[in-house]
Image 1: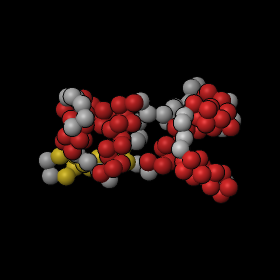
Image 2: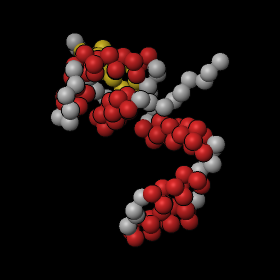
Image 3: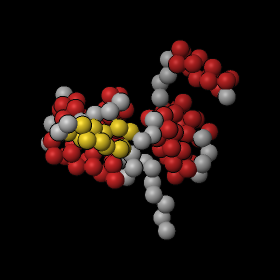
Image 4: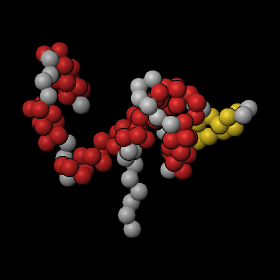
Length: 123
């Protein structure tokens, strides 16, 4: 039996970011936020919110005439889980190859490197 993945699709993650940022949101709230960045149908947002609720990422409650969606887990928890799953899949659970890859592939400023060094020292 295959374990259920905690990784969100790109569209699910985009919607979750809106709900996390707002704390809780109606379909219209999410739709209007996404519409500022790209064209999307209201019905698509409604469907995706219901999918996220079915998957256990959101909980909804009735508020007057609209449902209000609220995340079931904090953003940091979901991101941590997605990163862990990514590292497990690509690097067999070893984080060091990922960090080395990022250091070689990205162009970090001196300040960013100093901040990374501080995080390493704290770990």
